[in-house]
Image (cartoon, rainbow, N blue to C red; front, side, top):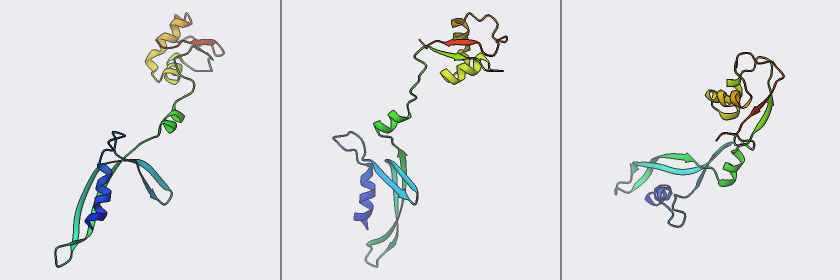
Length: 135
């Protein structure tokens, strides 16, 4: 039994070449989880008369890990580091554009300044706006 549980506990050992624990995959039905083990606890629940453990319960904590390719695929291709142009839609406000483009509605002033807008509450639909890159 200890030989079997040692295989799971071994997932915590850092690979000296990679400087990280080994990747593991947990598959259960349609679930296919890839990650690293962060914590393993074990408890032996049944023993032979000789004291040798024959059953154990293990609790394993896994943390998801993405490969470089998977991380790259999740990066948005159009980022806020380049100037863009948008057409204002009906009832759209500068703070909405800032939230969409910069993921921060508080950056609406950058859009207002780039477009010479003095009153952000009076914007006609259809107006073309420059969305400046963030510095």
